[in-house]
Image (cartoon, rainbow, N blue to C red; front, side, top):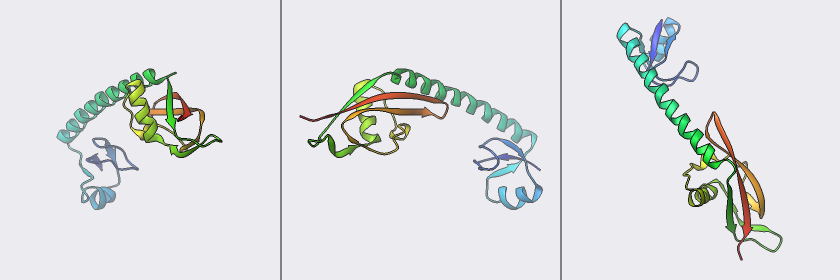
Length: 149
């Protein structure tokens, strides 16, 4: 049976996709849960229009992410934090701190989830932090953590 997805279904596709599924799966699960509707000519046209709008929106998001990555590539961020004699920070520098520092110093607003820091920075030094503003776009930012005087 052909169905048009009304919501994202992990094993099938995204909203607006037209899928061929088993009759029982459609009638007993997808349609009663409101995840899909039976495909008709009208619903297929509507799904195609939705797919085109989604492609345009995805292209705009990708373009914005590429511009952001271009602005961040090669930039160097300085973060000042309180540290002990051995260079160990009293706290730590996490993704939210780095996002705030990037916004302040480079005028680029990032969501902290875009910064791929495996664990918070706990020592003074230089680090390279990968930034992924989009699944298809990546950049690297140099971060220098210095001790507060």
